[in-house]
Length: 161
Image (cartoon, rainbow, N blue to C red; front, top):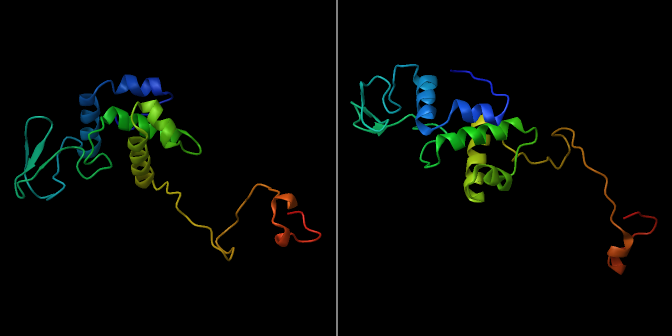
């Protein structure tokens, strides 16, 4: 079941119909049957109730979400999987408003998920344009600022805008 390729959202939903299926998949993908503590990799790990584990050396509890992009969230894994599929399958990404509508979550939650996914996959849009123009090629659409929109003392003769 590891390294699945989905051709549609429907296939994704059929593959992961509930939370437990998602947890089982992540455990197999992350640990391949040999659970390792994120706090101390050399420690013995005890399985506890509710898909939790306990690190013997540190005494800390953890689950498959710990130290991943899903960490410290109450959002269901199925919604996370859908968000990852939707975000990565759109060429130019997806807005948090649209993602929120698709997943039936608030816009703030969708924004949070979008940023975690982008951060995880290195899809950061925060690069600034270098004012010297040495940072690379920048393409802009043509625009026209009319003379009539300018103040009288700002008009420039023989200028389009």
